[in-house]
Image 1: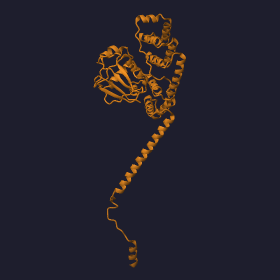
Image 2: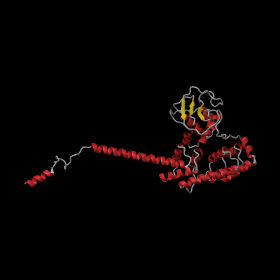
Image 3: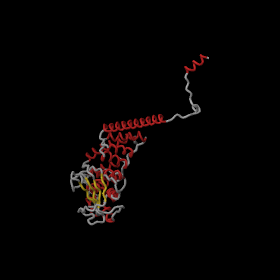
Length: 375
């Protein structure tokens, strides 16, 4: 796995956000993308910090796929550049100097006088040199003009769709909701049936937030889902995953909240863990904490992921190695204690007590017997 170098030509020592970024770029970007960019700026000021895609994803409660999506978006608008090694692995993230010429342009800035470098220890994406990563990037939501919104409103399909969604939600759509809906229809090219199924599924799962629905829509688009049948197949697999995790945790009578689902996405998506491994981690969590703790289960699965665990056989091997190491440690400690005790006993002089505070006499009992008989 190639090292990734995070660097810039700008100065470090503090986290500075350019007014140009705020005025020209932030307003059009997804809020999650903004968080990723700000975190990159922060990392540049942390000397010796081991930056990694997985670490960034954990910090922001994202998946690695979400992080790569954000990287690709910022590269597209021209404020960072992704660099790749000769074997097509991500090796560097170059942030354009926020105060330099060429900020926000498509031309790559000159990489010289690099003033800040942070080593990246892990990355799961690959791509051709100077080409965007294999993670497909769903375009950011457009800002529709009044004329465009009017044109959409005259489309009978769109009108029927908006009416149906308002019926599901039992409230009128806001301008932001309508823009998101049109984004699915116009930019992601979702059919009316697919959009309705998307909204029905999310509401049925207890998620009425358009932000949550938009995340699902983007994931479907990146996974190439274009029909209701494909969505049903994907949803069935996911529902089985979520149900199995809830059962292992003993959760019932409620749905998982978004933060908990983010853990599920991380385990099954970023880590690629099989269902039986995830359920085993959940069961061990209950045994140790007596409660369903997603962070605790995440610590188990993260350690397994770092150890390259892919099957239950790998888990059994790790358990055996851990048990043998414990036995060896206990034996070593016991031997150390015994050796120390023996050494102390041998070196310890006899201490006089009230029973041994006088000189001991040595008698010759044979000689005493002769003297008694002679008398």
